[in-house]
Image (cartoon, rainbow, N blue to C red; front, side, top):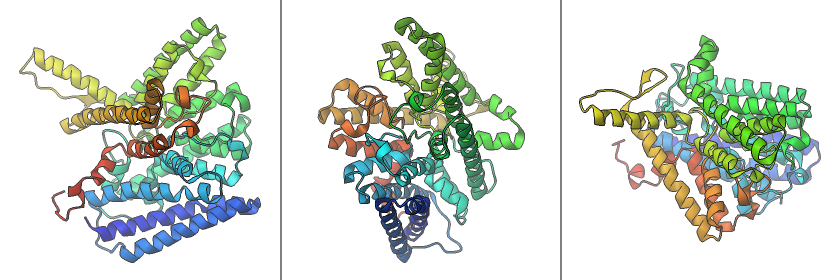
Length: 486
């Protein structure tokens, strides 16, 4: 691995992180938020200092190309470094202690949206903006946004894109890597702008509309109010938020192709159609369950079901009502949607619908081959054959997620949390949802978690955002070996 290249690119990323802190700093300075302004000024200085030190030891030269090991190192170490730098405004401003600042930063950049702040409305607007920006930057991907607006990475930039984008397949829509990143970023900005405008028309003031738009399209879920959506919004806003959360659960690469070839691309996408089917069926089940078990008015029950299934399936985590009080059947289906997540290539977390489709088709293929030993067939997705490596990769990822869910739950039980709450927090954290059931339910925060569980939650949020194997590769001794056998 070329450490000079890695160091140089990490230096660019820390510079990008410092630049992202400039808008909150300006907001703090103009609003005379002296603590916030000082905290952001210190944060920007630390980012510049880190950039200077990293550039001293590295840098890109004209013929440099990023290989697979450099791509994994830049993505994994870049996310870790920026998440650590991102905690400084919370800690330096005196708003959170060091551990809680770490949780808030990792949760923001990973798109989990789990907060340890019990009263966000006492925070200055600059900190609220930084929370939303961390969601937004982390949603599409720190490195993807960086590639879209910064100099070319070289022909090996595809390895970085593969290391950060989510899902079993990593297709590109443009011949050049940077053009591909720019197209994704353009769609991301356009959807955020449309969402902010829609929220403003639904009654949110401009600052709230912009913040909620950023965290909706990023499926992060950070808000600027303590109450649920129903307390500061209307039915119109709830349906609007549900629509944009579902849109954000679709593949952004699919939207790039649809922009070039027409909207028919969206309706022909098997994964997105399956996702919409799951959302529709589960919404109907939850609505009926609420009507029968809780005697809720049909319109209110349908609105609650639409909003919360959109919120949890997209792993955004916005809350309109206290769904922790819902009947067991509703909560079971809601947890299932949390675990499944959205589509590959979206900002949503979870297992991804594409993997579920591949696994079901793979099992069906194995059954057919048992009945017909001479059968030669392939697993298909959207009418195209899928390589065996991709199918086995989906199976390996499913296994890794289950193992890590169990491991994190075991850590929390060791830390004094009961079994049910441990499972809920584990699934919610690994799926990048944020709220769940019980101790970190719809109206609760991660502030109630013991210190060990909070620290481990940071690691598991980091693992889940980079889909596990990118991070685990960093801990492989052979990864750092000078051998070029990669």
